[in-house]
Amino acid sequence: MEPTFPQFYQDPLLLELMVGIQKLVQTPKGPAVITDRTICYPEGGGQPGDRGWIGTAAVLDTAEDADGRILHYVDGLNSLQEGKEYLMKLDWGHRFEYMQQHTAQHLISGILHSLKGIGTVAVHLGHDCLSIETDRSEIDPEEITAVEDRVNEIVRLNVPVTFQELPFEEAQALGLRRSIKVNGLVRLVSIGEFDIIACGGLHVQSTAHIKQVLYKGSEMIRGHVRTHWYAGDRVVEQIRSNQRIVGDLGVLFSAQPHELLARAAELQRAAADAQYRLQKTQLQLVKKTFGDLVESSPRILGCPVLTIDVTNELDTYPKLVSEAVLDIPLLALCLVQQRTDGTLTWMVVLKGAVEKALPFAVVRERLFPVLQAKGGGKPPLWQGIGTKAEGKEEFLHGFVELLNQGAVGVETH
Ligand SMILES: [Zn+2]
Image 1 (tube, rainbow, N blue to C red):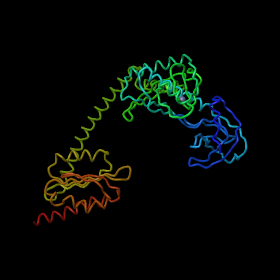
Image 2: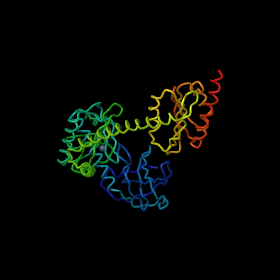
Image 3: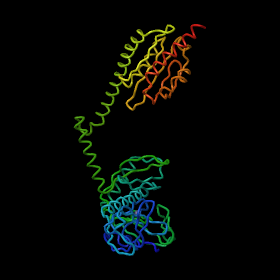
Image 4: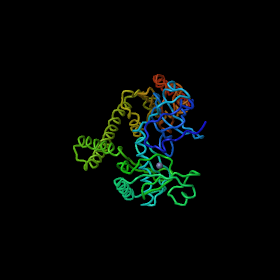
């Protein structure tokens, strides 16, 4: 089978074309159609594959295989037959959007290079924004602003975007900002005098079609600064969306846009302060109520013995108890709390003679299976979780039983 003829290079604005179906194939990505020629650009160079229709079948994506045949992934393969001709239509909205993003990427990379000497390592055209991984580990915000302003100036100059084909050696001699990755004839894409690069993708016809670019932000990747940009209609969408957010926040905070940051920081501080005071009050309260419980508990070997199910208390109760027990000199505590996900938190405290009567290793051996418990700790406190919450009564009773058995042993020695 011959490679598919790429009509899109000759006629990048062609929206419809009669095509002959050479083969219908099943691929790991789903059913696909190979035609004799196509107006659908296949995924490549960071630009996604085109969408459209072949007859009534929707083309969801387009990709090229190793033999230069272009696969149109379709929904509705049954409506098509090998050897017949169908009208292929292009999803122009999708194509134009990515031509815009792709050409904007050329121009941004070109100006990063010519204005600031910053090279492009990798690019990505996403659903939200376009990304350019640079060869720098640091870029000043002023450098980015200068590049953004220059790119938008060139957008407004309505500079033609053109292409020519040159033999490899001639193209190589031009000293392009990125190395050429193909052999034979090289397709060179120029944005006036501002950028020239070897590229097999599709581009808008002039920079005015880019409309506008807007810097979104950066992140570090593989030791490089990767910059993110909005281009085309996405810039207006983004500004509108941000305006709405700022407007809504202004109502929420009763503040002007320039006051929002200070107001948010102030609220954050107040919330942290309130949280701190609440925790302190809770701890005082737990110390008092827990202390009263310990006072009125029965004793073994002179130590108060307390077994409690605190499922109805706050989630933070076990943590507060772990702080409260620091002030209590003698104690045998076994605590459980059931959690909303059906599991359970457990805690054991052994302070005083009870520690000899019931070594924690015995608790682990005899009582862990009851809860299917996990966890650990060090004297005097152990804690963890259990997945078998229905065993909680048996766990609490078992603790007292083991303690009583151990106490008899301690007393007789
Ligand atoms: Zn390109």
